[in-house]
Length: 477
Image 1 (cartoon, rainbow, N blue to C red):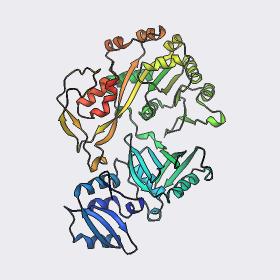
Image 2: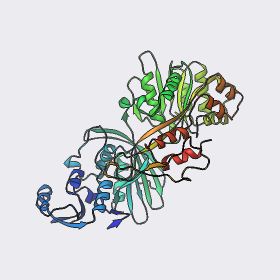
Image 3: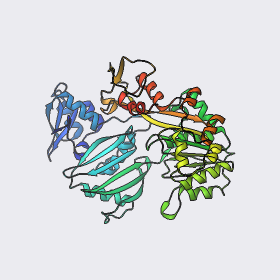
Image 4: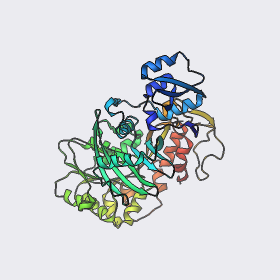
C-alpha cells in the first residue's frame, strides 16, 4: 500500500532487515508468511540472481515485487535512515530484536533525535521522532499492539498502568546495548487513548564547545566579556527548543574551574558536568526555582545557573543574588534580547534595580541547515521576502530543499544557532532605568545585529532556506 508517496511499513516488517541490507539490495518488506518473505524492490536496479543471496542472508524463502524506483528511494530514506554523527553506532542484540521499545530508543539516539512521540487516533497509531527540530513519522503501530506498548513504557517509568484518565510523569533510566540515557516520560490522555512523549536526556556535555554553536567573531567576543564579569545576570531568551540550555552548558564549561563554586537548578537536568553541583527541580515537594535559589545563597556560590526565570518571585531572587556579588545565568521566554527587559519589568522587577544587575541579554534561535548533498539553486521571486523587511542587497537566486537519502528525505541536515547580543553598558543601562523601549537606533550605532539580520546572512550564503528565515524577517524592524 502506498501512502503519501511512501510504502506503508509496520514495525514488525521493518525489523525483518537491517538498514544496511535494505540499502544494499534496495528492498522493502511487503508481507511475511511462515514460509517466505515478499519484498518490494527497485524495478530499475534489482537483478533476479540476487534472490538466492538474499535467501541465504535471511534464512528464508524470498519473492519480490518490482515497483517504481522513486517509491523505493523515498521509503528507504524515511524508514531505513543511515546512522549519522561521529558517535558509536549501537547494534541491537539478537535477544532484543523483539523488544520494540528498546529498538526505538536506540534508533532514536543513533539518529540524533530529542523526542519520541507515540500517539493513537481513530483508525491508526504511529510513532514520530523529532530530528533537527521537526517531527518525522517512523513507524505505524496496530491498534491492537498499542496498549501493550503503552503499558511497557509505564512499567519501566514506574507509573500506574491502571490510571488512564489523568496525565502522568515519570522517568526511565535506559542502559542497554552500551547506551546509557535518561528519559523523561509524559503520558497524556487523549480522545482515542493515551499519548506518550519520551524526552531523551542524559547527554554528556563534554563535546559541547562554545565556538561551534554559531557565534560570529564579534558576538563571541561580546558574550565572553559578559561571562567574565564577576557579578550580574546574563539571560538567554528564545522559544522552547531553541538551544538555550546548550549555550548555557557551553558557558559553564568555560567557567568550570577549581577556584569557583558553581550550582545549578534545572528541570530537567539535560547534561551532566563534572565539578558542578546540579539540582533537579521538584515542584511536588516545594523545591522550585525560587526556593532552590534561596538555599543556594547559603551555599557560598560564585556562579548560579537557573534553568528558567518563570515568575516574579524567581526574578526577584535572581536580582538579589546578582546584587550580592554573584554571577547568575538563566533563560527566559521572550522574542528578542530587548524584550527580556520588558518581561522582567512586567514580572515586578524595578527598572532601577534591573539597570544595575542585568549584565548581558541574548536572544537565540535554531535554524535548520539545507542538506549540502541535495539543495538546489532556484530563482527568487520579487515578492518572496516579507514586505516589512528591507534587504541590504537584492538577491536573484536562493537555495531550496529537495530531499535525499543523506537527509532523511527532508532537504535539511543539522541546525545552527543565530544570536542577538546586547551588552549592558552605561548607555543601555540608562535606557533600562528610564524604562525606554525605542532602543533600535542605539543598537544600530553599536553595530548590534538583530536575529532577522543574522538570519538573512545565513539565507544569503545558501546555508538555509526562505521558509526557515521568513518568520524572523517578518519581525525585523
